[in-house]
Amino acid sequence: MTSTGLRNAAFDIESLGFSGLKGAHYNLAEFELYAEALSRREARQSAHGALVAMTGQHTGRSAKDKFIVLDNETGDTIWWDNNKKLSPYHFDVL
Image 1 (tube, rainbow, N blue to C red):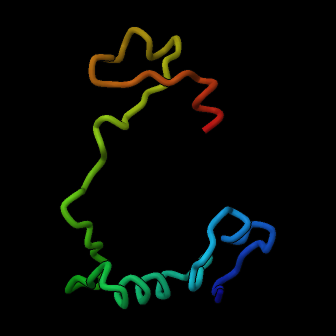
Image 2: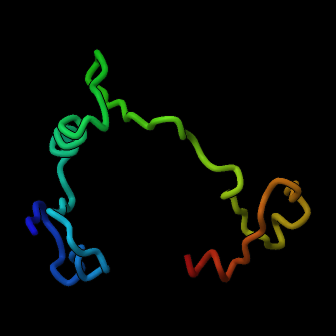
């Protein structure tokens, strides 16, 4: 597997459980990220130079994946019908 970019060898992609990859890019500079996204046709460049990601049909956030920490401050101020509760402990774990 080929690797490009600066990385901590103790935390390479294979040590994280990925295998069978052709290569991995670590901590690329902005121009390198642009070039990679453009070459893969995952993005295009706007007339003013900004990178425009091609997201496909799924965009934005998933409303069912929204969590708010339930604590003394939020307990009585959040409309809980459309929001999932997350304990301060689980937030810290994440």
